[in-house]
Image 1: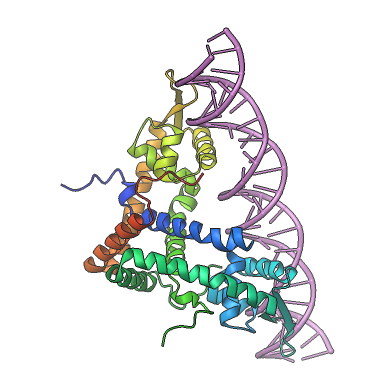
Image 2 (image 1 turned 90 degrees about the vertical axis):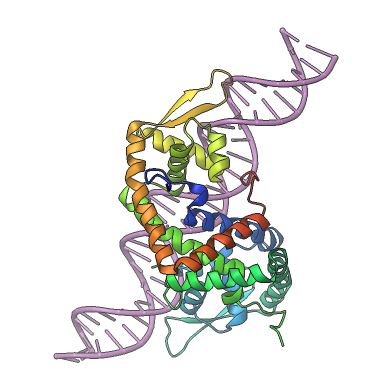
Amino acid sequence: MTTLDSTLDLERFLPYRLNRVAAAVSEQLREVYGRKFGLTIPEWRVLATLAQLPRSTAREVGRHARLHKTKVSRAVQGLEERRWLSRVENPQDRREEFLSLTPLGLTTYRAIVPDMSAFEARLCAALGPDDTRAVRHVLDRLEDVLGLAGAPPPD
Amino acid sequence: MTTLDSTLDLERFLPYRLNRVAAAVSEQLREVYGRKFGLTIPEWRVLATLAQLPRSTAREVGRHARLHKTKVSRAVQGLEERRWLSRVENPQDRREEFLSLTPLGLTTYRAIVPDMSAFEARLCAALGPDDTRAVRHVLDRLEDVLGLAGAPPPD
DNA sequence: GCTTGTTAGTTACATTTTCAACTGTCATGG
DNA sequence: CCATGACAGTTGAAAATGTAACTAACAAGC
């Protein structure tokens, strides 16, 4: 006999568990880029995206980091105020601007990355090689099933 | 040759992927209890917890559903206003109150559960039995490694 | 050129979340 | 009893987020 349909055990409910695990990870990570560098989540993502893909536009950053355009807009403002990012208007299309990290921004980024990588490394070490592979595989499958492959961010 | 340490590929970064997947799932679920029943996430979790563990206190609900006490407090208020929840002061300790769903609240809960279960079922069906098992196993391991077994919620 | 529709990005406003301070109650030790 | 400290829960203010409306610029058809 299986579980009664009328009650749902949160502890066994996949969406809930997924969310809880992701929240725990996010929280621990925010210790790093939040407390230590004063970045919000969107700001960190924009920083990471621009380090990887310089001269992107806000739209491209949003698509790549899956951030809503308002979050990108505000994160860009924040980073610009700290002189970690600069904008150059695209003369071909004056609606958009090319975004790049300043040397200062790049320095900050490079100061954060080792902490991030270390976190992931610790996590994988704790999981062991087999379960680490399993995690990656599961994420592949979930991204696939949820249609997170090449879809645009929530609009 | 492995990836350069100075740049981090967001697409391959486990915390980012985890977060993205969890966000996509949450979003789809909120369509159900949000649009259809006008519940916030904390409200839904309190409802689900109390359906499972009636006569819990706010503290117990928070611990079980991993919600900060302020979120619990406000969710309880919201549910009480809708007459979906009632409180009874504990005479043994007048700081706390026992929370229970009203018949109306239970009815609402039972109206939501099938939608939730159906969502999970669709997800598992899309994954197939092997990968569904893999997801559960991975969550077990991650919860273990992240110390999410019996730890208190963020305070 | 001018209208119509679309797109990049910003801003305003409402809702949510977070953080810290607060109230009232309990427990302990003098 | 009556301090002191801890604890359950609430509240207010600040920060973050989401939604929708907006501005400015492009593009296509006429």
